Every structure is written in structure tokens, then in C-alpha cells.
Image (cartoon, rainbow, N blue to C red; front, side):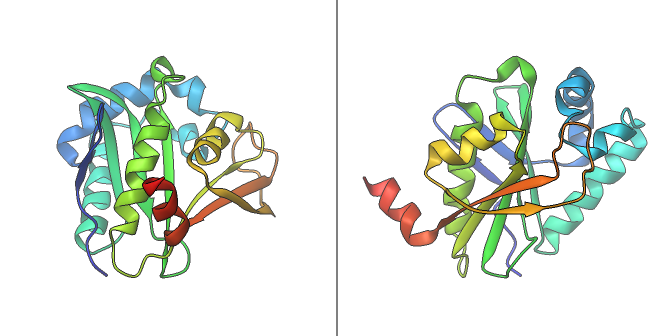
Length: 187
């Protein structure tokens, strides 16, 4: 697999691959958002983790990226850490999935829509990628607003095991195809 680019910028945001050196910023953001993230992310049940464990996780993500796998990025304005976004290889070989979370202090300003648009374009810059998807639980209305604003299509509803306290067990899967994205971007 071809390695995904490690950085993209938007008008307001810097979106760059996380490394073990980012442990303090990531730890502070996760710690400040425990209750905000708890309903949607099963991994939050294990927080807080030690700095060593978080650096090990970041090193694992870095190696996966080096091997042509997932890209996990921090979203920043200057030195301010706003959240995470990533491109994940979790489906068909011609599809990438975007996952994300945003610091509670930065919601409602369009940052995640801007970041997800940039990551969608970045995904389609990769040869062989024909679809990009965003998945979220039906109850996570804020996460669902992002693909809706970007013109993704709600492609399917899938029953899944409940893993986090806010989940309903119904996952919405939104998708956009390369040609549809190109048409929207040119309009």
C-alpha cells in the first residue's frame, strides 16, 4: 500500500500526522474531553492512560502509517490542539474511512467539517481510492452533521454491538464517490 501524506492544511487548520512527541498535547485534549467523548468511544473507558502507554500507541500509529496503513492526525490552529481525524483502511481496498473527534471547546465553528473536507480530498488524491466513508452511531447527531454538510449520502444503517454508553447499536454509514466529490468541489 502507498503511504498516505502526513500533512494537509486548510484555510484555518493544520492537519498533521501524530507522533510520540505529540503525547502531551493529545493527553491534555483527551483528559479535558473525557465526558464529551465517553458516550461515543469505547477506548475512553481506559483513560487516563500513562504517558508511556500513550507514546506506545502513537508509535504504533506511526509504524502503521509507515507501512502504508492508517493515517491518524491532530487538528491544530497554531499550537492549539483541537482534536483528531484520521483516514482508515477498514473496508474495501478502494475505500478509506474518516474517523474524528473534536475538543468540546471548539465545536460549532465548522472546524470538523473543514477538516473532513480536507481529508476527503486527500483520500481522493490517492490512486485507486473510489469512495470515502464516515461511520457514526445514529444517536451521535453532531458526528452525522459533518457528512451531511459535505454532501455524503447515507448509504446504509447497520446493526452493531453497543460498545460505548451513548450508542444505540445502529451505525450510520455515509459515503461519497470520487466523481460525486469532484463535481461538488468544482461547483
